[in-house]
Image (cartoon, rainbow, N blue to C red):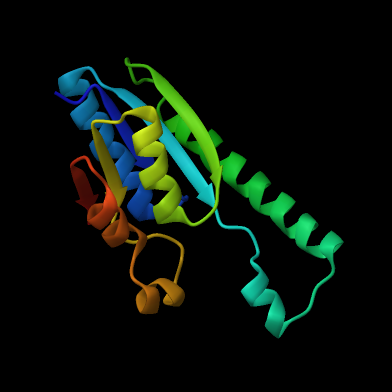
Length: 145
């Protein structure tokens, strides 16, 4: 039923709970787990308030990529005993958009996502990533509280 499950992780407790749930589901169905971390680079709108030069922005984005790689390494360690196939992806862009797009690209059968991540107060006002994924994904979405 679920041959391929996409699991976004950001290093938060919520995302680790989602990964654990995906493992349980994956073990029952023999699923492949596709684990993704999405980094949201500095954007131009933020730079209007505090002008930064290109080198500073590039350095900041490079640091975000290192953090994303570290989160994926942590996920890989947590999945060391998982019997099924695992793949790890680092995406750049808006988290909900990248998760939905990657689920289509990978032909995932389901998405398992934590209800709260590391995004903080901005997501409170703009809508949570998990809500947007559930709204726009074309596959079942399990939101783990």
